[in-house]
Amino acid sequence: MTSSICTSLLNKVWRAYEVDEIPHIEGIYIIGITHPFGDPEIVYVGRSNDVHRRMVEHKRQDLAIDEFIKKQFEYNDGEQLRVKYIKEKNPETKESEYIECIADKIGYWPRYNMR
Image (cartoon, rainbow, N blue to C red; front, side):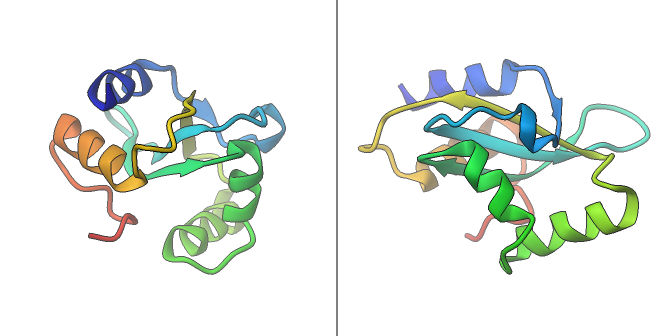
């Protein structure tokens, strides 16, 4: 089940980090940053009871991913940040399982997720 959710999430279309466009849903999300060539690099995988609220919190709190996002908004108003999310109500599956699943599928560990 976790693998199919990860695949569905990875197959979603990247969206700009525009909080007003992100729904209040329980789910899994990924944050990426664009580069001049190729797909965005996934820098963080998260799970939240309210993805919209969590995206707002990333712009205000002090974890490494939060500091990265704040710097991106200071640098270029978050223009290079991208997000994907999927509705998922599965409290039995831990966030770490989704992180590992995404990392396996993309071939690297997202730089702002702790190991």
